[in-house]
Image (tube, rainbow over all chains, first blue to last red):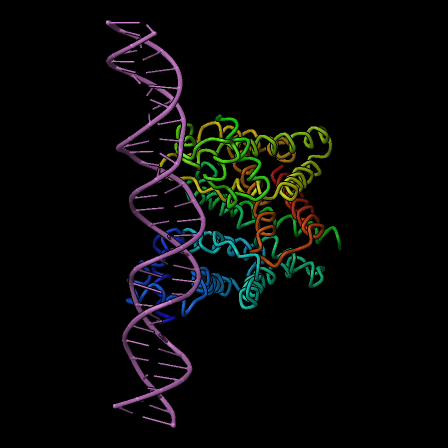
Length: 196
Length: 196
DNA sequence: CATGGAATTGAACATCGTTCAAGAAAAAAA
DNA sequence: TTTTTTTCTTGAACGATGTTCAATTCCATG
């Protein structure tokens, strides 16, 4: 039941995003009553959260595979590859990727711990090449910087795929991401050198 | 009438964000009938758009003032100041700033031209210091890079102020923004030097 | 078979944005 | 002024939505 609901919701979100999700249709495709949903979940948001967790897992797997392929290579190139992976995933899973950020957290209860743990693991992927570029950074500033770099790439991809800015062809967007992360890498190296 | 509606909507959005906006309350505070709204606007989204335009104007004014203050100084510092301005505005006008990006454009009709023009003017503020750092860049790549840098800073601020990431104190966030944009500046300079 | 508790149901509720037939107001014509 | 035509305004009503809960069904236990 529970897993049926999540699966059905996942299919809808993957196809049409959060806006396409709706309790009555969900009940029908799963073949249960409307009220039954609320025996399993406190509200629809909980289902969305479940789907988002799965998306995050997919994403992590996707990015980690690329990171593994680049293991040991030039860390600056590794950063670029990570950013590219982010873009590729976002483009090829747009609706469900958007759902990750469209879904406003009810400020009552914060994010589940598992969610935060997933995030931390993602940031770790950024931290590794970052540590190679900037061995002088302590743990905490390195973690913060990884998070900041993640957010920056997110912003570039996110604003572009929303229609909030005049939309760019994906190829141009890719060039921008690569160039920009390259610049950040150069800046990081220069900063480390200056510190030496 | 029209301006009353916009003013009332602006007050609501500035206080409680888009989620607080609602046709019936709006009609009551303006003192008109529910249907009257739809004599003036085709739908509520149009009012939101109007408020967002005003927010964009406020924002531009805010950022431009800071940019003017930094005129002629070290362009790398100028970039940092712009990013700081972005953060300051977002923090001090959170709900209405969020409304800018929460409001999903109905894919039917794209953004109004005026909106795009406002954006272009914003990016110009970034382009100026960028041009000083990278005189080698042609117009088009410079414009693209300005847009990319804007998006990056947006991402850092946006993800932080959403509750989607474990939230940081604003002071730490400010440090991150400054450090990060500083790194980008260094990277830009190094790139320009290498090209010379 | 009877009985008590648990699980399930779907009609009903509250709240949205939006519409539109009916009425009011204004303008034009007589 | 009175009548007719046009325009504008209105708020009840519609359709969707998430969520609830009294009534019903189900099932394990005595």
